Length: 371
Ligand SMILES: *Cc1c(COP(=O)(O)O)cnc(C)c1O
Image (tube, rainbow, N blue to C red; front, side, top):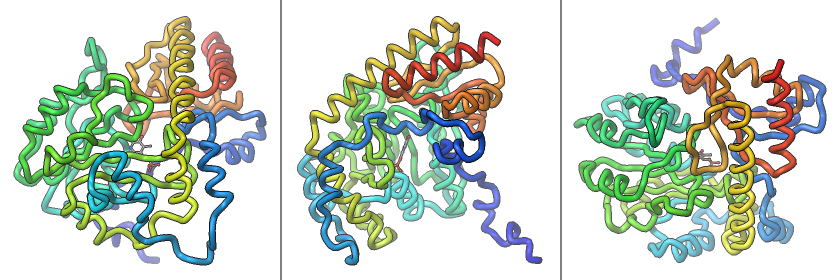
């Protein structure tokens, strides 16, 4: 039999598959538990916006391919961000545009720079092209302001002549940590003009208060790319739609490698409708703020340190082997996310749910930890 692994490109040989949150159906199948709550993938516990759902119910002819250029959604996003539609690239989730960026700019002679504990898709997208991942140590766990956060100075220093892309998640997943406006803007200004800076704002809608909105800087920095998604606060993770904002030359390059029909008809329609549902986003933010306070109070009572978070999840230090706690939570019908793949063996990443979901988690965790 052929050794297929040895036939794969070296970058892919070195990769580990992305570890997704366990789907509810899988837990049902494997453990036979019911009444399951999934707090593992940072989805919106409110479900999709009713406007997005209504748009899907009114779809036209699904035998036809979707609009390959997503004209209508792009126009709306361009108006929202006050850019030209030619500066918008649509993706099958923002994961897709991250991969497109890697395909356009990276090869085996180049590297991408990002922080330790940065989003797991950056190494996957980078290494799949044969490029090197230059991983910069995160801020220490005892850092007074932003434990495990991005160290912008160290990231800046790591950029070398072979660097083509720098990935910054703000706020970051799985840590929830963030960087503030003056520091981030100064960072972008300090990166060489011909190195692409990707600022991944997947959680922007949750983090709006006080965090930088890098989409407003698109026309100030020729090398800036900002990515956003409909998977988190917009509650459409199941549809797969996200986008990048950039200068139009970069957008043109991304569109050369993009699959022609990468965003489906339902995703295009639902995303457009979701943008109109401001009330839904406000409700989502309020639910998140309340849930964040509820969980923080509970973790404090249990003596479990949390990493500061500006997103819709908390990274909690369980003080013990996280995989064991994870498994015990599964048996109690609560799916959370171990982050062992990030090298964090005692932490769990827990998505903020509804009050009832949070209570289910709190009760299960308290019972596990008191054993
Ligand atoms: C969830 C997430 C994304 C993208 O998700 P998509 O569903 O592919 O849009 C991108 N970046 C970060 C940091 C995320 O947490």
